[in-house]
Image (tube, rainbow, N blue to C red; front, side, top):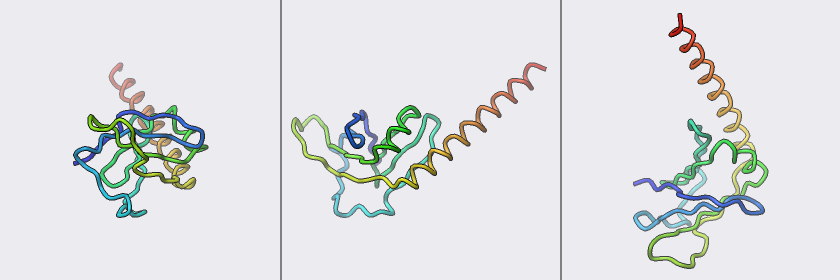
Length: 122
């Protein structure tokens, strides 16, 4: 079962992602580099760490490029005060590649949408 961050907070060197890990709480020691990926989505990027997904909207991509620390905190009905579950520094190169890929996909999507509009109007 995948878990999605429900809120993110900007901090000095990165982003805090608030995630309810009540139903899925892996051992942070078992998370390997290959368990982490950055994917392009319609709204921006998705950072996936194991089964945890952190959506990054388009307007936060540049902020994350300059502030690459991602802190994941477990926040659920049974927690009031929590320690960071996981802290990682996202690779600059991977974020840059993901941003370029997102812009290409967005440009191509907009181009296709405009083409389809034009075809409809004829």
